[in-house]
Image (cartoon, rainbow, N blue to C red):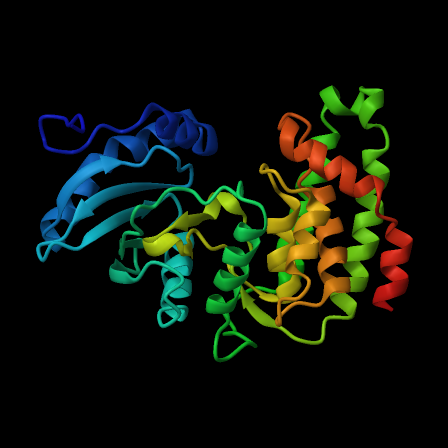
Length: 315
């Protein structure tokens, strides 16, 4: 059974507490956490919810598993940022007819809090089954394709998201543990190469699509009959190949990055050359030596990829 306080609110996982305090700081984080039980109870009463446990994998929000009065398994999401919550609810509604994301059941735009359907069984879709997982990902990508690919004006351009990721990479490798380690001396040069490839990709984008913009394994859940569903979208508009490239670059299963590209290249919505170039960009941006399995796959892919050739192919 889920541990609950005297007021009926499920126990807040220690991992979530630590993440909130880390992101918001001691004073602001503790204040937000102190107010959280009252907010959970308020929405449970307002929407007639039976409360279950609080998910412990989040960092930017509190997600409470619950059941509505009519028996619908659902998730109450209380975000750290009201704007982020509003954005996520709008994106989920945009994909409402796709059967590729949870359905928004209720929301409070002023606070960004919303109630969504729960994906069952809801286990994370770690890509550990070779080509079959590439097929599942490709099918999810097709379901996420919207009727109006240009997207609404309130979505930011993919340029902003991609440049943010490159900035994080620069910050990461400027830390002393990497900057002073000769094993990683060349990665700063790789970041510069990736930024040049990124610039050409952005200049040569002809078709713009609504993107999840963070469609990696941790944001994909297994649903009924083994189908995959997307959660936690960042949202952007841009090249659809970037969506698949992030998934291909960040792998912890049996396949290499090159394997994934080969398995995805025949997808009707993707262009193999642009997919490979975007994968190079995200492989550089998402390289984290402290995660050995995906790091080794990225190292192997980068060793076999010449950014100058990528630029020539794109032009």
